[in-house]
Each structure stands twice: as C-alpha cells, then as structure tokens.
Image (cartoon, rainbow, N blue to C red; front, top):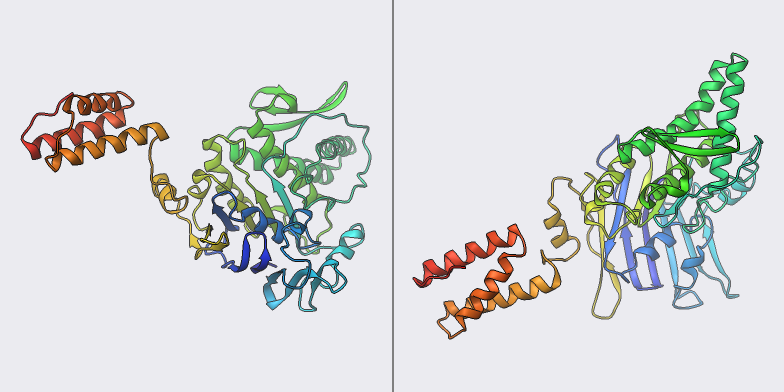
Length: 420
C-alpha cells in the first residue's frame, strides 16, 4: 500500500493545492518524500493530513478555514482508493473511505482487535523533538498496551517505559529459553532487540547494546565500551534511539499476515523534523540509513536541513512556497542527488544565495559597491576601501582568497595598485 497524492481545499495556507507522490526509482530502497520550505509554508500541515489515515489529526482540525464542505482534505491511495476529511452537514469533522480502499473494512476495527487480527501494512508518526529517558521497570510480564496506541501522534508516539519493559522482557525470555535449551526461541527474542541496536548503530556509526541490569532491575545502554543511563546521553542520540526503538518495538509486537522479516514490512512512516538535535554529521547519515533499512516503506519527512536533503539519492523533494496572497504551492517534485553540493542545495532548494554571516555579507556588499565605483571611475575614499578589504581578508582563509583575487583583478584593469 502507498499514498499517491493529497489534495487540500481551504486548509491552513493551502487554498486549492494537490501534491502528487511519484513512485520510487530505486527498487531496493525505501520511497522517501522530503518536504522543504520556509516556516509557515505548510510542511507540518501536510504531515498532519497524511497522518490522519486513521482519524483526523488533532493538529489538523484547527487548520480548516471553514466548518463546512468548503474545507476538505482528499487523500488518494493506490488502486484509486480515496479518503476524505471534511465537515458533515451536522458540523462534525469526519473521515470517510470508499470501498476500494485497502483500509476498508475499517483499519480502526482491526487495531482495536490487534490480538486476533493480522496486518498487511501499518502507519507510524514521530517527531525529532521526542527523546528517551530512564524510567523504572517492573518484573517480567506480558505487555498489554496496544502497539498502535498513539502510533500516529507525533507528540506522544514514544513511550520510554513501555520500550524498556519490552527490552527487559525479551532479555529475560532469552535467558530462560537458553536454560531450557530452547535455542530457536532464544534467538528470536535476542534478534528482536539486536535488530534495533543494529539499526541505530547504522546511523551513529558506533556499536550500541541494550543491557539489562538486575540489581536494581534496569535497562541501560552500552555505547562502544561505556555503560550509560539514558538520561546522560546526548540529545541527538536520545532522539534517534527514541523513534527507531519505538518503531521497531511496535512492529515486532504486531501480528503480520505474512512471515516476512520486520525490516522488509510494508508500512508508511511520517517523520517531522528528524534533524532536530542532530549534529550535521548525523543529519547526513540518518536518511540513507533509513532508506536502506526499510526498503518496502513509504516515508514522508519534513526538514529545514540541507544536510538531510543532500544526504540521500533517489528521494523526492517537494518544495513549498508562498505566493503573494499567502497561499502555499508545491513546486514540481525533484529527485534528490547525493552528488549535489550543499551550496547548490542551499541555493535551489532553500533559496539561500549568501555564503557568509549577515554582517560579513553586508561588508561584502559594501566592498563590491565601492569596487564598482572604482571601475566606473567614480570618486571613492581609497584608504577606506583598502581598510575594508583588509578587514574582510582577516575574517577567514576563504575571504582572504576572495578579496585577494578581487584586488588583483582591480589592479590589472585600472593599472592602479590595490594591495593590503
């Protein structure tokens, strides 16, 4: 299952806009769609609408401009199926599906009966602002919390206590099976945890291991050779662990219709600003790792980071821009190329032409204006010009090269000496 397009009518900054989602070009990697744009262009609105696959998202409701049929969201799925979110004649905001939809019969009904129902696909949503912290765990016991609880709530989808209890349960069950020589079951419990460890290690390029301590009963994390509590981890690592660990734990607890490796499952994932808290080095690694790990997933990501956009090959980039009336429009989608420079991405995707800080750019503009006056043989204060050139050249090696080149060219053209 996949989402093919979404249509907005009088929702937030969208007056009448359709965004299509082309299929992936790389068969052995996830289909990724990246939303970029300035603040206020509707990136979060798109994600909240997409994540309303089960019910209208709370953060989408207040973006309806009208409380009647003039405001609606139409979500198209494969097989020409459709979901629509709109107000009914009685003023009630609801989600409706047609009989073509793979969500028919009700996905909600299946979720409520997850213990006896099997699933062919699933949906999950996370925010980069989520993190994980140490929490008290109890004795080994079967988890009864629905694995779909808050699974599409960007703000509450992570449950650290539930995850740590799940790790403790699997570690304990593995040990008990080994005592009984149940090697097969022990391996299954072990793999449930190591799958998460390997996924996180792929991104951070460090070996990690979840460790069950017995006195007191507690789950800690081993990063390389250091045993640490979750509370003292850097925020970036907490953020990565929180959503990937929670996602794979949920997927491990779901009854699937077919016997396929968890990482090969068909699911749809919504990620809001996953670059938050991440050093640029990790921003460059997270999407390529996710794209390789979840090859049959469809993933929608919002970001402000050129490092995220430029890190991955074969993702679709959807740039949102505001028109003169304040309505947002999606420019034609473009395939990302990891061979493009960050300078090019800053210019073409983020509309940033400048290379230096605000004050330095202002001084460069002044330098160029004075240089133009010299070339036009207009009078300037040459001493002030050279003083400005000297100041700029002292800021960095890069500016030393730029200013030196400009002054040599100026001397060559005017046959007048300009040196600092």
